[in-house]
Length: 629
Image (cartoon, rainbow, N blue to C red; front, side):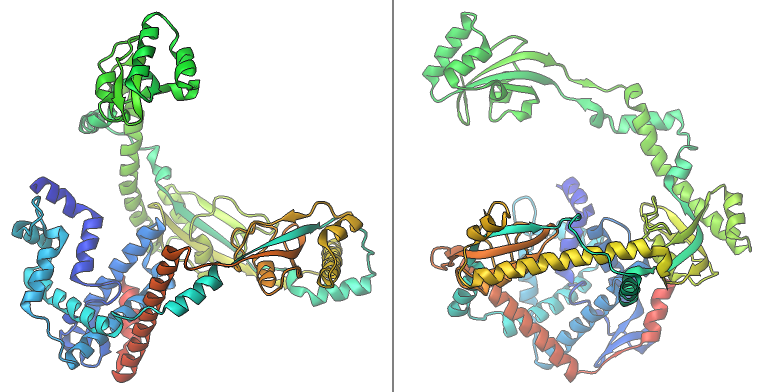
């Protein structure tokens, strides 16, 4: 038990559960330990409650780590600030403090019995017999650096907040009428017939004279304006830059191999065929025919109606076979067939055609793999040391170019890069390090960025040399582009006019199939039943068109632009939604409405508390706190 406990408390999932229990750091903060007095340096004040730098910094770090895990990358402090995590943490801590202040004002008191009950029922504190285990409780707290009194104090605040908010929104009634009406509105579906008018890039469009084209160029300046570009140089230190120069000693390779020996153990496998019968008599009949020398696959097809795919299982492990089938099959030798065996789907005959014995992959076979993995781990350490050397060299007054030469790094030059990662030719620049565009555009011209700890254990520093401002391209240099844009727009306008004309005829009672035949527009298609948001309609019935058809009566027409051209549709059928026949979905919606209303009440309550109690944020101290991180 102690071993499972030790492993359990090391997992992030378990620690996350504990953190949720002891304090809602990401939602409500830890207001009860903010009362340390002005000497601790309050950054946020809520009434008489002070939130000091250590608590705010700790909550920020936890929230940043949580977001990093969700994104699958390690955020820097600056990136976290740009994502608004500082504001989120501050507001969550303010909310927690407001609820604590209000609970105290209302006289909410949580007794020791309530605390003890909550602790006893917490699953993470229970032993193997399912009862509260004092030893586990103490070890879990110790592994998270929390003493028992602090834990109890935090839990008391948590329960106090739960009671406060529960009394406000914990027992809202469900409105059957509202749920029914919203269910019908959301789940009604419609079916439409439609045709697609496709763009024709070769359709005739008269090219205007230069006077019109110049005016079009000026009126659509944004379309013909070159973006601003930045010219810069950068160093990007990655593990691959140093990994090839790392040699792992033989003794370390062998030690790693011994430690991971279970990983290189290849279990015994068998190549198996099977027949499955509904009853034992049929299986015994087949077994007798196999004993006479009949072919297994042919007999399976004849007696069990199985093809080769369902007969041949291929290579399997013992645990791949259900129940006791694995145990019995792995007693068979090559070419041997089992007697009838009871299995999950009837009676089985199993035949082994080959046996692949268990073995351990030798060191020589996995040497390259182990070396590569150890070298990758070592490369991270070497890279960290190299980044420190780079900072020291730059701190000594070296230019970025000189520093690159001294540490043996490559200095890469980018002559032009826009905010979308494209070069002056409009094509994307390959292999841009993550975050480089933001750094290049956030660093002043002529200056050098800080050395950034980028993603995947890499380091990035940028020196911005110059900027080419955004400018309207001169008409003469892009005349052909202007002509192409003008013609494309005219073809689009022509197609839209044609679609609108067809919609007009539909709304006067004309049939879509008649129009399609008359104008030789091709086949009329029928959509799947779709919602008013366009769900399940397909690419030819976009969301806007679905909304228009929901505003129409049967027989009404509408059109909308798609990537292919314009879709013209005629409403064919309306499928009403019935909350009685789909009671489960309707009840789920009703529960969600109650939850949403409870959330709205809590938001309004929170806003009211902010008006009632003075909330002050020392913005300068807050900025300084995260400039230090």
